[in-house]
Length: 396
Ligand SMILES: Nc1nc2c(ncn2[C@@H]2O[C@H](COP(=O)(O)OP(=O)(O)OP(=O)(O)O)[C@@H](O)[C@H]2O)c(=O)[nH]1
Image (spheres, rainbow, N blue to C red):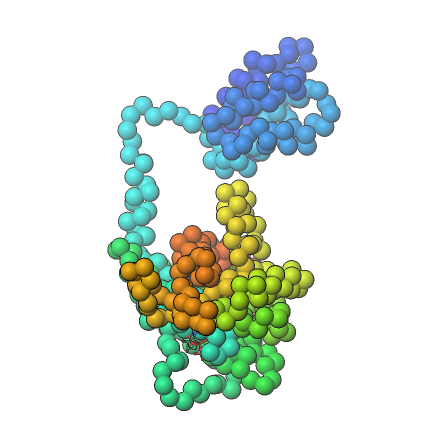
């Protein structure tokens, strides 16, 4: 086997055997017309969409050459195997029950014991319904409500306050941290009101990195990194305001931003749709990276799901803690001048879509994107800076 080959001995042997079967004795090469057929025989069970992969690799490797040399064939197979399967293994039949089909269950049990963490930051001006929406999302009084009677003091600058709760559903425990940002956008001069939020997001990365590079590491590093930022756009019906653009542009490199149109029951359906379209144009024009559409997904299934979600961005939401009886069922909603609007009815607003994405389909992906994209960028930047710093001045 060639040194440095990415194929295992087993794979090499199988490929060599297949190649030998087709080898034209005189030239040591094999006719390109048989390559696809041969490679499919080897890759058949392991590679995803092998035919497509092969055509792509073959075209790159050989151009118009009608024959292919064994070494090139090996290289091509190796690349396909690593790229499409990562495992690159050719399935070996088991001769009896081994028991590794329990791995899933083992992981499930461990994860359940450990519990899950999710950190959400909510940003938007006072009174946009942030606390109500978070409470509606998690069906609990998880976020403080400001609608209690009494004077409401608006801080002079943006404050950042976190509250954690453990919630449990069917034996699954979730430690949920909601970070509120009172004072954001509430001043006459809102210059730099995004800065304390950015500082908070980066501080959580710094803490995590500090724990990671410690000589004695904690068994489980507490994860306070912000996994998602729900950004509340006021239902003006116009377009994004400078403060919305500035905030999202400043933060989109550091956190997964999910924009929502607050209190969308105050807009008619036509107003809402036109507003959404203008916001989408603004987001594109300003090149703002929104979750999940702004991130690349190799997996076709994931991409298809995200394309569906993209059409809802920004989600037009309604929050409420008031129940009413509709068709004999108690449902959450709000009484408006047009009638009763049900929060969880997909025909009435997009609360259900945003809840499904945040909780049912993308919670794990939000965490992975935070780790693999945002935190990774931060980590690389800091490590590079610390390498460039004179000896002894690293402050990681
Ligand atoms: N029409 C309408 N009113 C809402 C909606 N969500 C919340 N409200 C009302 O708006 C008021 C403010 O709601 P909050 O959830 O306290 O708003 P907030 O953004 O957390 O406010 P601050 O704590 O001041 O930052 C309350 O009277 C809510 O009942 C909504 O979707 N539509």
